[in-house]
Image (tube, rainbow, N blue to C red; front, side, top):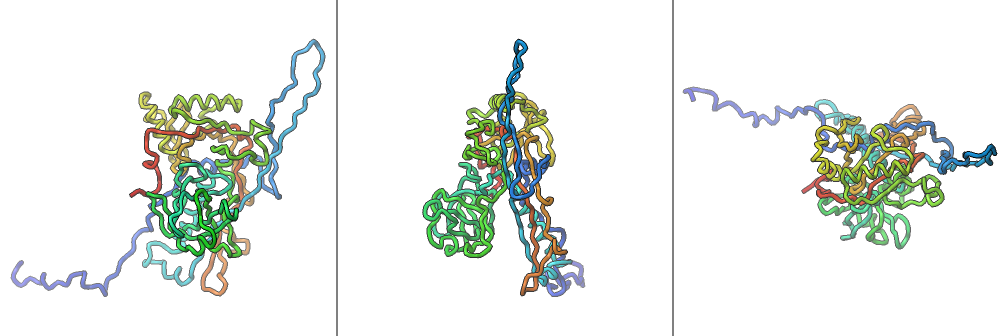
Length: 439
């Protein structure tokens, strides 16, 4: 250091804490993206000629072959009549609610915030809506999230079987802050408790909830009791309701991989076997089994499975298994497909097979896109603003609230056009392909 240098007297920037402050740059980074090709299939589905009005939407389907034509010596045959079968669906209601403190909103804006609070609230709302779309498109109309595997204490239980499908991890659809309720299968045959998720152990699937008093106010949750989302942890509140039997008709109802339903859309499968999707238990799950399954599905439904009409959706481990079986053909590198939304597929016989990490872990569904419908009543999801504004003042508080609503349902007027392979086993580990955090 030169003699007489002032460098030693320069005050360090860290000493000027009273004169400096942080500048916030950019927006909050979203590290929790939730994309699903299954949801995109339903978002792309059109209503066709169907519409929801009145108490029920009634539609008609032919479920028997038309017969009566024959060759004769000139005699004209008797008339053979054919009556259509009537099905029904009803619209369901979906909501998401947000609230803002006016003072907090004013403070959390400008240079002192990464982004305006109202913008962040909107982003969170629509992200939650997207998560609901994924769950509803894949799951059944029962709305079941999973079931209790075991009870550790009054505030801890282990969850299993997403969508009611044995072995599928439900934690893809649950996070801290979720509102859960459970149905007592034995004692009351009713919702017996509700609470807020406080924490999740993703390796054991153990969920800790915030209040034993609201979770088990009477009976204890037990093995196989189903779990649902709900409106509030207070089951005595006048606006408490769970999602049980109030969800739209996702693939859990339309294709019903567990074959648990006997009547769908008011049509009994026992009376009309062509109303059943074609389901078959998997044995090898390779490209040969898939090809055989498509030939069988085409025979059952009466028209072939083609790349133009059908798409196959499976859990990533199942798609990885198919890719392995194609190694000798080099198809996974050269003969896949690019789907809407940027999804890259593996292809067998030109038919796209796409992976969905939210899907049933041991099911591969072949969906005929021409027979999937998304029917809205009153338009797509949007903020309710019939009184002139999307915001409503909160009574007795300096704040405001808004909610998003849509009325819709999903349907297929030809359930037999779809099929699935069930009970898939692979040479890879399913959990390696899970979208839940790992330790």
